[in-house]
Image (cartoon, rainbow, N blue to C red; front, side, top):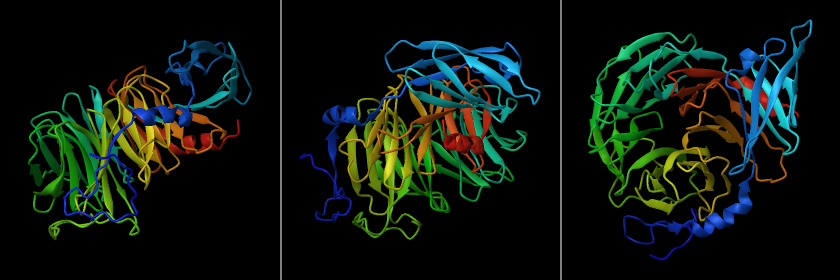
Length: 444
């Protein structure tokens, strides 16, 4: 097949083939070009219980700074004194500098690299909801949370107080994904039993079960208000579902490899995504102008139009794609098993807009934030905010959510005021979004 770039403004229906435009790209050359776009920023780490040990005089905690494939630089933070107002005064060793220290935030700079990281501790810690690894979670602005653990316990809980409300049963295998509908009172789950189940968070009842996959369901997207949903599976299929009639409206993607993750983006009317070969079902609601982005175990990243089912593009990365998220409508982030992160544009995906390769630790979760950046959770327990800037000279400050002691962060969710993380240590951590926002505005 001839390799060519895709222009989303061009007409997609110049051929009667179902896949009006398919782009197969090898990113070997793109990876070389990426080096000039790659943000070379070190990873800064801190002792996980720093808020506790830095409360008293002579309290100490370790800190480190490490560039990819380079030895770590270690230092210590020590509390020298505490003012009459209760404000601790801290010093740091080995070229580290404490810029400020508050109850739940700490600003740290490494003089040699010029790198600054702001550490944010959890506002609340929910350790009683689960007893085993929390593998996925979601939250609503209405103070509801849903999560699943390695014991296959599906729980509804109060996201304000961390109080368990319901324990739900129905899946006969492990649950891998749970997502709330926009209403905030209905959610969907999918997992190893190849089924999707739609639940009422108010009653705990499951009125809808969707069957059709022949392998585990790995990820789920809600279309518009939720009349339709999309699921991806280890069977290599991405399916569009009609929730009201519990039926499959068609396969959007049919590949031979596991599809690990997916997300949706909406494009304006100026983008011609083509028309379906056959009239769309009247049961398709809100699919016009939407594109499904997906990532596979073999490194494939692809995009398909929901309404026309036309394949827009697909290309291959060097590592399995574990997570994918839309940053803004035409830009999306991809997280890989080898630790790489890529930012791509739908307009020009032959090479990434930007990339990050700061750690070999696998990416497990990505959460877009206001279109200005994204949080990523890794297998080493780090959860870091990456700001997006086209300028290499832009001030580069990271915000890191702390708490896990090298336990993987499997999932991240936001209710508009707080960020929640799911971790292998069985704890759900809740962080104040205002702390993160304030940290990004501080001039250090």
